[in-house]
Image (cartoon, rainbow, N blue to C red; front, side, top):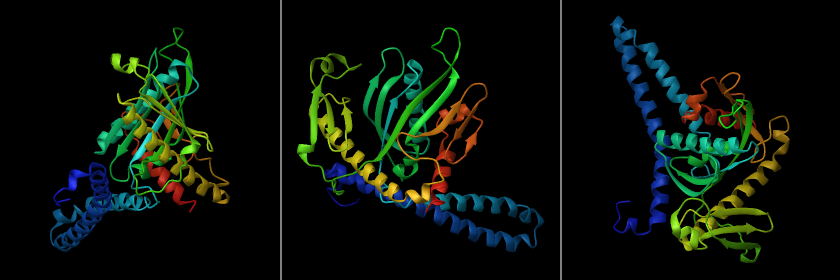
Length: 327
């Protein structure tokens, strides 16, 4: 990073910085554990003669145990693309306007988690709903082991609440689909034949000023063999939207290959809940009681608002431990 010209190639530079953060996310906590164990040895020695110091030993042990538990969880992030950035796509599903609102709530939840954990995120595509919320959104989260932590979020997220859009105050069930794929750079070979991809250009929809309404800047790519569709309209330049759409398509196809490997291990998953984009993975209840429960791992919490404010690390860690049981 200290080399002259390091930042001349921005994409390569970002990749190197991301790799450094991934290494440090494991090495720094590891060094911290070693330092604290060394401090504990000294505390035990001094505590033998000082009762006040001896009283500090249980708290020190608890702190080290928590550090080790976090380090153990981090050690589970060892799959091929775990260190990559994560491309997250959220689509409103069944539930009408409530589903559109719910999709935007999920975007807020993930963006707050990213900020709290010192991750960067960049919106790739944003399609607002005319009444409220969004129809869909795609964004990339960059930071240490971003894909490794977020990959378990793929699936259907279900919300049960009293609808703010229903004049009679009835309970409404809404669904939103989350898809998480690893962002891949040019060093990852993805076999895509140009003749297998159909490109459609169109005018961008939603907010964005006169420019997006008058030019065909939006790009939709369809990979015909897999029927994989990606759409990008967030940039004013058609060229930039095309580049982002191709990056999203490559990421989707990499994820499809990962899913094929998972299916090859189907025997190991036969007694477990289904994983993937089309399966319901988590329930969020605001009525009649407040709780959030993951249907795969069984992990749950009664603090609904805390979860929607980005406190989802418990769910992410529980998924990693749950997956470990199948390997």
